[in-house]
Amino acid sequence: MKLSRRKFLQLTALGSASLAAPRLAFSSEGNDRSDDIIISIFLRGAADGLNIVPPWGDPDYYRLRPNLAISEPGDQDGTLALDDLFGFHPGMVSLMPVYEQGDLAVIHACGSPSPSHSHFEAQDLMERGLEENTNEFNGWLGRYLDYRMDDSFGVFHAVAMGIAPPRTLAHQASSIAMPDIESFTLQFPTGEEEKIRTLLKELYSGDEMLDQASRDTLAAVDELALADPLRYAPENGAQYPDSPFGRQMQAMGQLIRADLGLRAGALSLGGWDTHEGEAATLESLVPDLAGSLAAFHTDMGADMNHITVVVMTEFGRRAYENGSAGTDHGHGSFMLAMGSNVNGGQVFHQWPGLKDENLYGSGDLEVTTDYRQVLAEMIDRRTTGMPLDTLFPGFSGYSPLGIFS
Image (cartoon, rainbow, N blue to C red):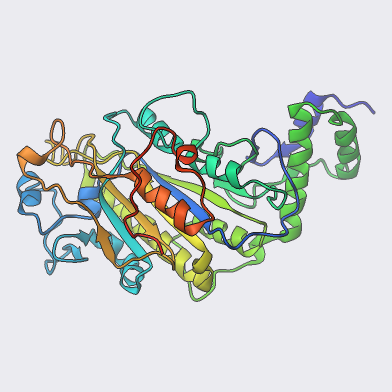
């Protein structure tokens, strides 16, 4: 029986799994616990930091958003006070215990110095860790992985929950993408698995990229099946939201529990482009984000000692509301950092204020903390580190804020 490459691809369907260019070691032994597992979460669509982390102590917030602002602490559905200036959207309530425990920090008036208001361009620049377009293809987290790459890195060292790896994880080795653990498998015709596996080895025995990627895919499927991460139920009473994002956060926890050698993970939560009807959108998205993060923190328990989660968005929303009960594209927004080695329970900021003369451009919150300051400090303090000019080409002036211990 002869089997062409095209016929093989027709007979064996990989359930939405993606592998990039090859350069893999398949042993997951020797996972170096001196490096935290880094989980990057991107809020796509430009999340409104001014309503997710409202500056309720700044009176200009209510002047600029007379209808859309989250009301003051103590009011029904009012702000959850974090300090005398900032609070959480009421939908973030499930994260309050994590914040009060000191495992969650907020960084406000934060973002990219790029003036771009294009979702695609701003996301691309932020995921690559750049201020302006260059020929640098790899993502910031991918460059970290390349710097740390050694023989202990297994095939599951970089995993994205989704249909394709984001630019954040792009690097010289392969990243795996899966919308869920169940779909990361090869579908063989009944009774044909061994025959097709043998043919696959013969068909892809060369040194070309497709040959290596095919062998890597089969090995990855086998390794995941052997580890069986689905057998790990949430621990410590954790309850993830019954949502795609909640299930993906649970799956990331299962991959960590399966000890597959995960070094970095990436997830996305979209839908934050709130030009109109913002209140209803945030009432849906914010509890999903907060509940999923809180459940992951509870589920991982003591393992949060070697896990750091960072949340970011491409840019914020305009400081003043528009005529459609929403907000237009802005500049500064917020970040979150979560982990047992985060100096949490506080909001890190250099607050520029919301007076008209302090706004950026056409009326945006100013960026006073470059997001790369946060990520550089995380890599510096929660891993064995790497040169700053390699991690973030063109970025200088790194000064740690004390977010990470």
